[in-house]
Image: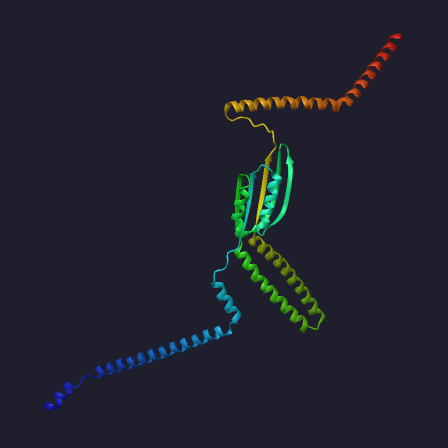
Length: 299
């Protein structure tokens, strides 16, 4: 009996056994859940890889090449023009030299004019030279006389230029698709609709092509506007300083007096016929008035 009682004391209670079983069951569930999650992640990762491979394969080679080209830095497109104002000894000779200089630098003349304005002979030229040689040509022109003013302006049209090129390609592709549809269409309604859309597309292509042609020329050649001034021989220049200003004021007063006298003489000669007519009318009126007074006295 003593041995049986001792064994009973050594046996663990029933609730401890149940607790151990619950802990073991929980651990089994946790381990099985982790295994399922890892398998799910692996399968999801595999499906994502397949999806990426499918997307890459479905992209046309032309689009991939276009994306690669976009990553490459594009050539900068700028419009660079200049304005020069200078004084020369001989306007006509300077104009001929500038035109020859422009032709030597693979440029061309847009317009040329020589004219006389009051006490000066002036000239105006508009020429175009390759943009790469703009600074060299400007220096050569400035060496022909005394430079009064020089202005250079730069406009960046890189974005507009390449956007216009891309848009033009899209319109040309659209034109080709419309032509293919035209060949496949047999109904009059569809043909008219396609022709209208084709006309709009071609009109947009013409406008965009013209803009691209302008941008190409403007970014390749620089426009130079040149103003030349030549003083006439014998032109009086007043000295500088107080004496010069006094002398200039005296000359201005004399010139103003002469101009006033000249204007008065011109006015009198211009108004002379009217003055003679008014004088004759006055004399006739006076004569008639006297006659009337004499008759009234006689009566």
